Length: 229
Image (cartoon, rainbow, N blue to C red; front, top):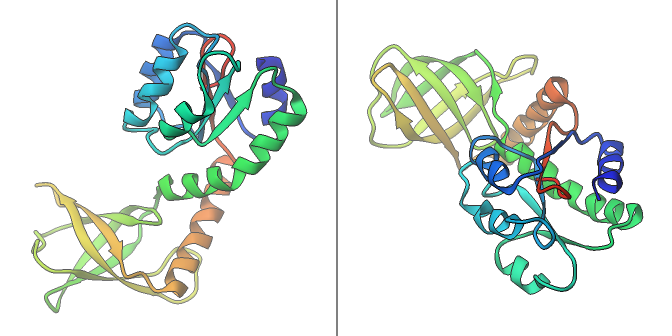
């Protein structure tokens, strides 16, 4: 099955990592993030348990998931009820796999954009209770930003952010709420009420940075001797 799936995925510029043991696969899934996870849950010992635990992992609870079934044990209803997105039935052919993965690409790209954080240092003005605070960003995603400030910020009320993305003309202004902070001045901000124009500009910029850093897809993993996690 790997001989069928690997070339199909590599044609889509997806890097493949194969794991041959269910226990090791479960360990990897708790610490590493994958764009997608393919699990042979019927013919690999422990594969079904890996499938069951996938949505409980902190790194891959929302990754696009594929279950490979042999048509005798696990049903499609069972795996869809577990939050699995796609099903491949054995025997898996290159044509069927290509159709399935092409259908999943948009979901994978959307999930990757949502998860992706771009390291970036840029000046940020944080306005809280009508008072401006100077800060510096450390990373940014579609949903929020991490910053460093020299003084403690008030924790009550929404913040207004002003900044300019590197290489972009004009500035952005948006609302945010504080998600977390620590004693060293590190603060996590979650964007809220993002104007569509700002959202479009941020998504476009992040897509460009993501393509520069790692290409279309970085990793897609597989568990079991015949599966890709």
